Image (tube, rainbow, N blue to C red; front, side, top):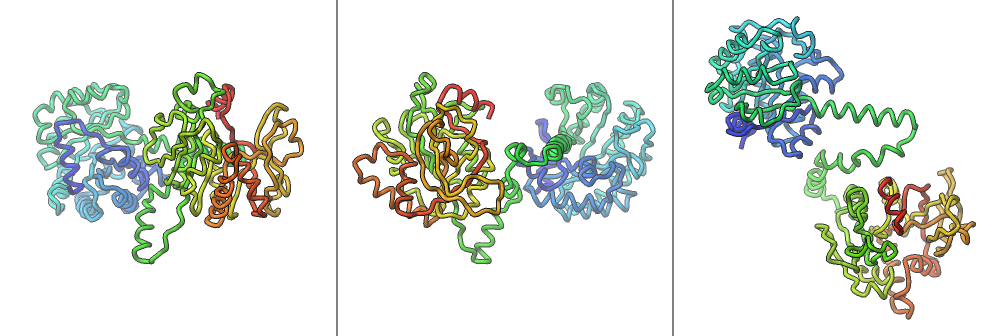
Length: 540
C-alpha cells in the first residue's frame, strides 16, 4: 500500500491511531521498529536537531532534506509538520510537489502568520492567518497534488491563541469545506476540556473530516478518553527528541567528568546496533552481488553449562546455576545477549543438568548426559565440531563488561585468553585459575604482547607471584581452532580425560610449544559460584 494511502486509512479508521515523532532517519526507523504505523515529522524536533529555534529559522528546503532521509529509512507514512506552509499559496504548491517527490504521505499546515512561533511560546501574542487566505493554501495544495491520497491536514490555532471555541469551530469548518483531509485541533491547557468540547460540537463532521490531536500538555489524560470522543489520530509530538536530549546530556557529562568511556560503554547501544539500524546488511549483500566480496569469517561461540552448581543448593534444585536469575535474566543470557550485540549469532550451549530448562531460541544445544561423572573438557569435546575458524569458548557462569568481548574479538593471535591482572585484593582463601605469563600487566601499551606460560588452579594465598587470573574466556582463529581441537582429541584418549578442565587443555597446548596470547584486563568481570556471588551479580 502506498504511504499516502496508509496515512489516509489511519485518518479514516474506526480505531484511534497513533503517530510517533521523529526528527531524522534513525529516529524514524526506531519509531517504525517499535510498531508505530506512522510518523510525525515534528517541526520542533527537526529544528532542535539542527540547533535552531522553532521559528522557521531552518529553511523549508533544509526541513525537506531531513524528511527525505526519514522517508528513505522507513516503509510507514510520514505526516510532516509543515508550519504555515512556508509562505503563501504558491509556496504551498511547491511544498506539496516536493513532498510527493520524496514519498511523504502528507503535510499539516497551521493557520498562523509566517514566520511562525512555536505554539507554546508567547501564545497570546501570536496573530492568526486570515481564514480566506488559509483556505486558499489548502485549495492550492489539493489542486497541486498528483496522488489523490496525499493528505493535507489543517491545524487550528484558535484555542492556543485564546480566541475561543466558537472561532476554532468556525475556522475548522471553513478548512473542511476548502478540502482539508483532517483537522488538527491544538490546545495548550493541561486538561482535555477544550478538545472534548470541540469534539462534541464537531459531531458527525468527524466522519468526513477526522480530527487529529497532540496531547503534549494534557498528557495525563487516559488515552481511552480520546477514543470515546471519536478522535481519529493522536500524535506523540516530541518525546524521542526530549528523551534523546536527556540521554545525551547524561552521557556527555559523565565522559567529561571522568575523562573515560569505562562507565558509559555498557549503558549505550553497541556500534553494531547502529550498523543494523543503518541497514548495513543490505549493503553487505549488495557488495557480494556486485563486488564479489568473499564471505567474512563470522565468529561463533560455545558456552559450557553442563554442571549443576550444587554449592548453590536450593537455587539449583530445578535449574543449573547458569539459569539463576541475575537482574531479571538468566545468568547465561547475559553472555548470549553480549554475543548477539557483537554480531555473533552462531551460538552453541553444552548442557547437562536439567537440560530441559534451557529454552533459548536459535541456539544449538549439545548434551552432556554424563555431566555428573565428567568435567569441562569432556563437555567441550562433545562440541568439538563447533570449534571452527574464529570461535569464542566461554564458561557459562561468568559476567563481564561488553568491552572485554569487543577487545577480544580484535586480538590477532591464533589462541588468546583473557586474564584479569588485578588480583592483589583477592582474599587468601579465594580460589581460581591463576596464570603465569611472559610479563605482568603494564599500562605501557606499546610493550610486546604477553604469552601464557602456565595455568594452575589454586588459592590466592598460594598464587602471590601469579600474573593474573584466567576468567574462562578464550578465542581461536582458524589455525588456533585446528591446534586446539587436535590437542583436545589427543587428550580425549587419556585415562584421566573425564577429570580434566579447560586449564589442562591450555597447559597441554603449551607443552607442544603452541603460543597462547594473553589479553590483560583490570577487573570488570566475575564468576558466580556462591550465594554472595549471586548477590554481587545483581549489582554488577
